[in-house]
Length: 433
Image (cartoon, rainbow, N blue to C red; front, side, top):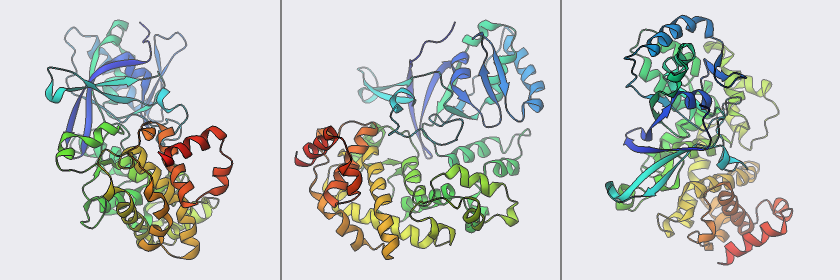
């Protein structure tokens, strides 16, 4: 039976030290539609009932997959272990599907909160998969899943499989999970895993770090330093606003933001294409790998702090990010309630958009002080980000917050002037509310 999309199923929220993930049960045929692996990929054939394999290592894996297929055909086959997925990544580029993508809601897997009597806290969850597009990379369990391609009983495609979903999990953490899960299993060598993903931060000179790797390092520092506005506020969790206001966070009077939001916001300051940069660096042997090669191989990158990154001025970049966040804390976060939209995913994303714009001037004038950022942002401090007009949690909510700050702070004036009349009206109404 061909699955009908969108598909919505119950989900269980699980919070552990790494972050929040969701446990769901999905038929194998749905997973074969909607998941992929960097190492092996299943593609639906023209008849819609069978699947073909694609991927650089398929020759090495086929004997194992045949064994698994035979096991699946057995009368007592079972897979109690969870298949681990990290939905919302483009299989072609490896980049996250941003919430400000025009069709994001029609593409992104999302978890919704459901008010339900008879459950803990009166809240349950559902997962929605909007489309059959393969947008969920497999962190662990690819052999179990793709073994269904080699089962001679088509009805076994309806087998329910347990899945653990880390929505929008940054690539470095996908690699960390893969390495950790497989380090004690003979078929996968840990050093090979790290070489494949290239995220062994602690064991590699910082001069070799790709932009996303450096951004992860900064995000960790921001989450751990006591004087950071994001101290203990960065969570590797789903990109859903309700996850930022869990009962525990509310009880402590604080808000949370996902690691993905922070990493992506920071990395854009010095890379317009993190996958490209990562691929270029990994094409060199470890002893020859350094950021200087990007100055030649990716010379057209126009991100505002690219030169600082290439010159290994990481301290300056970090100071710029941290000082901007301190200004944001003083002007916005310290004056609002934890459920204000400036504290939610869309608000923090919008602030990083603003930082991207301001950084151009900061680099040109060689100043990234708290005072510099405070003066730039101060006119926007009067905006009421608790206003329901900012309620839209999609990309348009993020865009509205960003544009309101741009207007009040006098940033990107040319872009603002070119907005449609309806967009300008929405900005004016939000500012004056």
